[in-house]
Length: 172
Image (cartoon, rainbow, N blue to C red):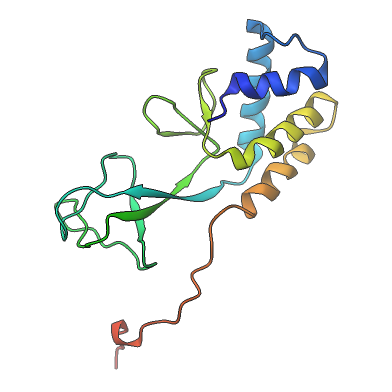
């Protein structure tokens, strides 16, 4: 898990900043990160989570995770009690956002602390490239294109199985 300090240290040697971050330098990087996050598209990536509970009444341990798909690719239908009617012990959650809080695991819209971590290390290189360009004098709206390109090529896959015609109900 890459946090803001790791991003700063990877960037510091390229932009001639001190390797051990000072308060002013780390706050400047956090400010530029927030600027780039506000200009970026929302990334979506799929995370596999473990389901707990009895078969037929599964649930997730984190309240912030909303199960989107089961392991066979079918959508997860929630029961009124917050459980999922499945026998699988794994499911998939679609998360959005570049950074998340280390303690709670909640997605953050803006970086507030140097302990905030990247939601996926897939976005590390595009963020480093965008930060380097912003600090080199390129406009943030142009520098954010690397992050936007990474957001469109995330780990989400297209569901290409055929439609089960038995589940389709037609109106006459």
